[in-house]
Length: 111
Image (cartoon, rainbow, N blue to C red; front, top):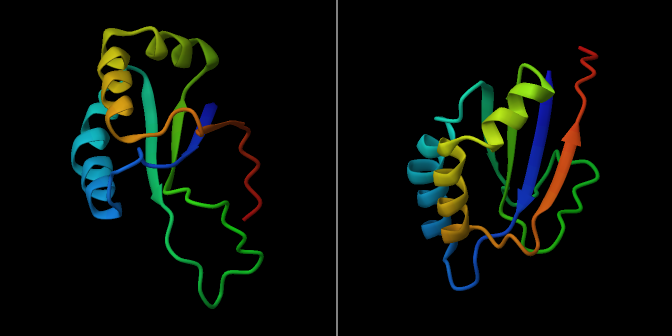
């Protein structure tokens, strides 16, 4: 499997409610159309409270998205696809790409 995560902030001037609506209702369906995508998860960042050990959220980050493909080749094909062009156009509407952190992931399931 080939997994990649993006940790990001909303664009300046966008409210948290506007961001959440766009992320869930607009971007999610667009990103879900990437060819070869096995799994796509959205993790909006909630306010840390009781039960959150080591909760040191970097300032102003709003969400983390995780994309999973069958292989590196499938991921590369998805990123080069016409469907990704739509994902990238939409990304610029609500994500501050200058501060986005990209995390190439490996899965090591313990439990």
